[in-house]
Length: 157
Image (cartoon, rainbow, N blue to C red; front, side, top):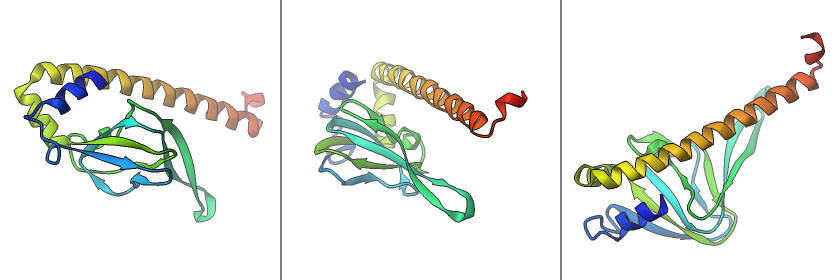
């Protein structure tokens, strides 16, 4: 993904400040806030970020749960790539670094002119999303098993 994106970002046709932006960040900076409206994708150029989200508990209590940590080359915000959506998580820097913010409709217009790069980009994005889905399924299985044990339900199955 990174090599394809570097090629796109280096193309004078895909202008910095219009189609994409470089954001420097320091530890504790919030790059994306859950619930905000977005239409961009982010790629971490360098640094580390943490993805968290609100989890509702009983009696209207909220917990800020950590979903994962991200590092150089990782992407986030892809759910806002094709349409304007609410952000589904908060992304906070845990170190100093830099990220590229890519405007979804500008990227899609670029891919209309350069379908070969679009193919490579979406092929890699598909692999990334498939890996995330596998990881999420594994977490769900572990949580389900923990819940069954915690409530002594497995003994009754």
